Length: 516
Image (cartoon, rainbow, N blue to C red; front, side, top):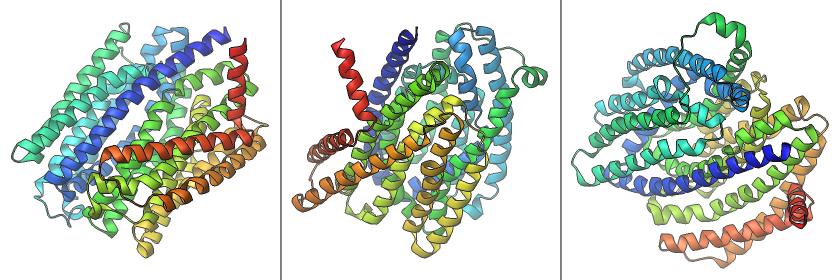
């Protein structure tokens, strides 16, 4: 039974990963191409304005409280048991809560717009741009609360590939239409906003048709507070805990551009955004693949013993480290040349800034394994940790930003991440659920870092001495990146085998299975 369940989890994870990877690769390529078009025809200030407006909207989205994550956790069991009544009740509770949050966001957005003359006092654009941008982005976000929330069922049921087709495909078409409009039509930004508005509606229709077709038994039912308090008290508890984690996530992802804008200009925000598009693009690629396995991890921790869970954790951590570390080295060596080929030398940032951003990329991607098991166990009780992380993030970013500019701000973010994600989160997981394995985790992590340091020296130093010419086009750049990536993967894999990490046990298990 366990073997059959494991095969089912693996099959679904692979299917989700393949679809997510294919869709994401196409989408990220389009994003880079469209960024070039938008920079040329809209300018850095317009893109900086969009980034800032989106950050302000994310502040209002804090009201979401982490309901989506809590509901996904609550759905694992009823989906496994095909308990349709409970599934309907949980989705109805989610809809009821989301509607209340949506009304709060509308009120907050209206109030915030009164302060736009103060917030955007440094812009050199028509002032209606700020209201139009924020209004359209707000409308798109609100559809998620009124209409799109039921897609959480597909996530919890390991059917994220359907979301990829229903949402990502529509978003790809949207970006293509926006590029065409900006390139061919006068008043390109107006057309950009109109298309953003229209495709938000289209994507909502597609998502809801997909959910309705997949779960025809899903009905709208009336819900009351007594049912929530009596039957779903654990769900309410998880939502309250996740609210604090949402605060930490917001501070991490959304405040940096606002602080950068406070110390510099929208142009610097746009330059930083170019690099962020590169690192976030690769992060999104990994996230799409790794998150496709998240529901499988949730199923594993609910059905397997601790030794089996730890074995899977060690193997996943090692396999992912090979990919993550290789991407870090590739990003460090290739990103400057990519920026030059993509949009030009004038958009380059110092190499020290890139190194700090790659540090953030490493922490954010390496945390995904620990996060998957924390979410699987529903370990959201450390409500103080995101508050500490946010305090360190903002205080250090402001202090260091005042003295060292952009690098200081990014360094503040990196420091808070190391404290929270590298030090605290693993300790929390291994002292609450995977008890007795914390020392093993520490030893494994040291082995991985030692192997990674050796590989970094073995890759970066020769490349710096041998490669002197700048790539002249994307094909040469792709070949250069492919060579670095391949060398990094092989060297990292070999070093992890020598250091006897989870990768070695994974390969041994595959060999034994094939012999049988």
